[in-house]
Every structure is written in structure tokens, then in C-alpha cells.
Amino acid sequence: MVRILITGSNGQVGSEIIEFLKKTTDCNILATDITQPKEQVEGVQYEYMDVKERVLVESIFKKFKPENVYHLAAILSATGEKDPVVTHNVNSTGTINILSACVTNGVQRAFIPSTIGVYGPETPKENAPVDNYSLPTTMYGITKVTSEMLFKYYHSRYNLDVRSVRYPGLISYKVEPTAGTTDFSVDMIKHAAMGKKYTCYLKSDTRLPMMYMPDAMSNTMKLMYQDTVKRRVYNFMSYSTSPGEMEEIIRNRIPNFQVEYAPDYRQAIAESWPASINIEDSVNDWGFNCKFDLEKTIDDMLDHYTSPA
Ligand SMILES: NC(=O)c1ccc[n+]([C@@H]2O[C@H](COP(=O)([O-])OP(=O)(O)OC[C@H]3O[C@@H](n4cnc5c(N)ncnc54)[C@H](O)[C@@H]3O)[C@@H](O)[C@H]2O)c1
Image 1: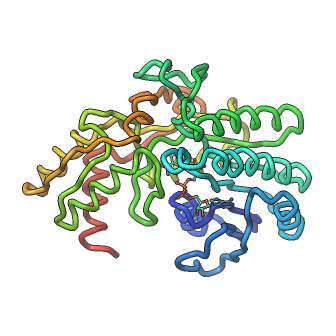
Image 2: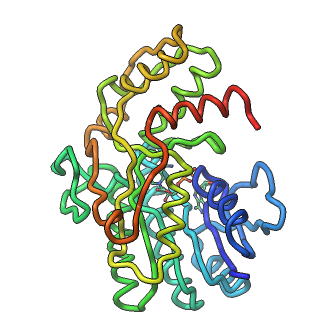
């Protein structure tokens, strides 16, 4: 039975990873966060752990002795701009604390997601290359570029098997996204399902890379189960879409759905990111593939909101 420690376990990704691991792996999970879980999953232990607190992190690792770690605690892009110092402390200091605890406690493999937020305005807008030399303009992006550099450092200096993916905007219904720049996708579908008008904080033609959560989970686990990987960081995306395109697809299903556009500070963040990113290495190295296109994603999300299981 593999011992797995998860940080940021109550978030959009953490709650899905716990469910996925419980279904697919014989595992003993310690789920950690600074908040209480909304519902406790049977067979999962929960513990308070602030990733900024190095001594606490070390002591929990020492006690639990994880073999695998999923480090998901982070402050995302839009919230990240509200307090750059806190964002830096959670995302950069938190990540080095986790990497260091992995080394001192002999962790076999760690997964730490990165983001399309590592790209900046000079990056090519379409098919942005995985080897990226552009500078991000958000604190979130700065901390994630730092983290990607730390993955390479900890791998080459300590031989730590740390694996990462740049998630695009993740669409899911289980736990709502907190405050990323791509969250309009979930909000819009939810408003449509509830028969409400939606006010979108991005312009209708702002295209961004996106992906449905079941595809994000299956591909994350596929990457984690490879014996070896050629790169520390891989790009993930299923489709590139905009609020306007989503509105049109939803209106084909819900004809009286209304959207108003009132761009705010998140428009500048979205415009600093590419509309699509290159996933060739993920496909060629370990067979990245997705089952849900945008229409299937919207249909599945609407089904879940209108007839929850
Ligand atoms: N959701 C997305 O669309 C998306 C896209 C790209 C990358 N990512 C990355 O995936 C990872 C998980 O993101 P998410 O969507 O689950 O975020 P989330 O905001 O839903 O969850 C993050 C969790 O971290 C916890 N947390 C915050 N500060 C903490 C601290 N100091 N110590 C411990 N826990 C703390 C929060 O309580 C929350 O439960 C992050 O690294 C994020 O950058 C997510």
C-alpha cells in the first residue's frame, strides 16, 4: 500500500486527485491543507499543514513517511495579484519546503503542477513552445517559473524524481475554482444550468488553453506511472476556447442564455498568456490524450449541474 501525502488537498485539483487515487490505487493518503475539508473521504486522514512552515512540514513528513507526494497548495493567478508577498511565500517558499522535505525523507516521486501562467506577453500566442524563455508578468507566473527551476535543481542536485505539468484552465464541477483567470468557463456553464444571466470578466474573443478535469486527472496519473520521464515539465491542454465560443455552444442547448461582457483586471492577465500551447512532447513521450472536446465538456458539466449524482 503506497503512502501518499497531498498538500492543498481541499482545492479544485486536490479533491479530484484524492477521488482518483482512491478509485485506482491501493494507497494510504494523508491529506493536508490550512482549511477543513468540506466532506471527509472514507479512509483518508486529514491534518493541518501550512506549507510555508518549514518545521511543521518536516515533522509531518517525518511522522507519515510518504513515498509519493502531490504538492497542490498554491495561490492562483487572480488572487495572487491581490497580495504578491503572500503569493510568493506560499508558492515559492512553500514549494522549496516541500522539495526539501521530499529529499530529507526519501520520497520516491513528487508531483507539483505548474501552469500556463509561466508564459508572458512575448511568448508566441499560438502553439507556445514547451521550452519557454518568456518572462511572466504576474506574481503567480513568477513563482511558478521559480518552481520549475527548483524542480530541475532538486532533480539534478539530489536526484529527486519530481514531475510537473503546466495545467491550462481546468473545468470541473466537484470543487469550484478559487480565483484563477480561466474560471469564467466553470462560472458560465453553472449560470447557464441555473437559468441565470452571466457577466463575464473577460472579453468575448479572449482565447485560452483549457481542459476538462477527467482528462487532466487521467493524464496526470499516466505521467506519474511512467517509470522514467524525459522532461521535468510537460504542457497539458485539450482545446483553445473563448467566452464567446462557449456562450454560442451553450446557447445551442439553452436558447435563452444571456451573457454580458464587463472585462476587469483579469483581462490583462489573460492577454499575457498564449491562446494555445505545444503538447507534442507529452503526446510523443508518454501518450498524452484527451477524451473530451469542448462540446462534450459542456454537455457533461450541464448534466452534472442539472441532475447531480
Ligand atoms: N485549477 C486550475 O485551473 C489550475 C490551472 C493551472 C495550474 N493549477 C495548479 O494546480 C495546483 C492546484 O490548484 P487548485 O486549482 O487546486 O487550487 P485551489 O485554490 O482550488 O486549491 C489550493 C489549496 O491550497 C490551499 N492552501 C493555500 N495556502 C496554503 C498554505 N499556505 N499551506 C497549505 N495549503 C494552502 C488552499 O486552502 C486550497 O485548498 C496549483 O499549483 C495551481 O497552480 C491549477
